[in-house]
Length: 176
Image 1 (cartoon, rainbow, N blue to C red):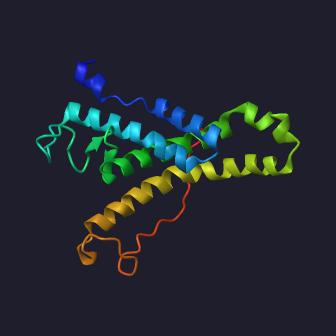
Image 2 (cartoon, helix red, strand yellow; image 1 turned 60 degrees about the vertical axis):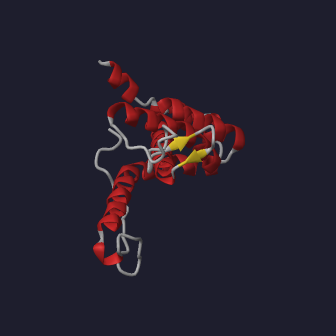
C-alpha cells in the first residue's frame, strides 16, 4: 500500500465512536453528528486532496477548494462537504446501531430489557427495521441525483414537478 493510499483512508469507526460518545453524554444525536462532522469533513478534504488536484478559489488560502473547502480554524466550511460528512456519519451510525442491536446477544438478553415491555418492543422493532435502512439511504441518494439532473425543475427541488418519492423496501438477506 502506497503513501497516497494511507492518506486516502478514512477511519470511519473513529468518527462513529465520537458520535456515539457525544450522544451518550448529551443525549442529542443531531448535535453529536454535527460536531463530529467537522472533523470528518476535514479528513475527507485532506483525503480528497491527496488523490485529486482541486482548484483553489482563493490563492491566499490553500484550503479554499469550493465546494469542498474547509478552514476549521476560521470555522468556515462549505455546506456541500459538511452535508457529505453529515450524511456519512448519520448513515454509518444508524446502520451500526441497528445492526449491533440485532446481532449483540447482550442487548437482547439484558435483564433491563427482558423485564421491560417497552424495551421488549424495541428489540422486536429493531429487527423489523434493519432490512429497510440500506435501500432507503441508497434510494434517497438516487432521488437526490434525479433532482440534480432534472432540467424541467431547473435542477432545483420542486415537489410539484418532481416529487422524488422513495418507498421503503427490504434489502434481501441483510442480516445473514
